[in-house]
Length: 207
Image (cartoon, rainbow, N blue to C red; front, side, top):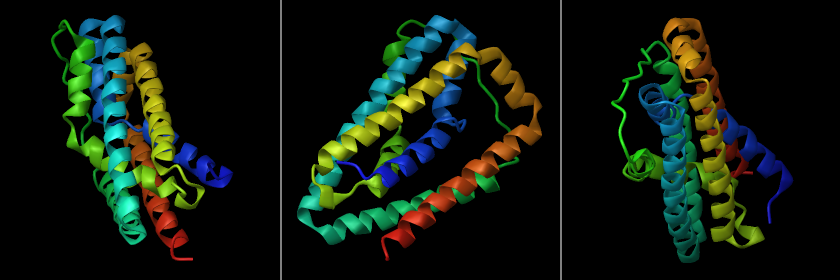
């Protein structure tokens, strides 16, 4: 069902994105600092469920688009590639921005709140709609299943990174706050990776 080269490219991109500090990681970090490891773990699994919700919704949408028109599907892919390039540029431009962690008050229902935090984040839906289609091969069939597998794989990688954050909560917070060079380098590298990915998939489709 998957082309090996395309899947390896997807894995590399998804792994880089999973370890890039973003809203999800900072949410889990804040929960861990406030309520301890247990609350951090519950929050991580909550965002996992919320992420899978977006994957399912996006898979249904992309499948419907492809069923309607192959041209529309490629339009979505090109728009997604442009969005990835924009994200990369934004990461580089904000490399000097402060990264602060707002410590939350410990609360009950961390799992439920993790689900809601992810489900109600429209940027997650937009990201999956732009990222996953780049690695789908319609000619291999089962577009819906391809999207589900790739999307679930991406969400699982994100959750693995979140769980690592839970374990390393205190040291990671100190590193993010104290090392300006680390923050800049990480964001520039991730940004270049996103730009490269967006450019690659756009040019590959023109051949």
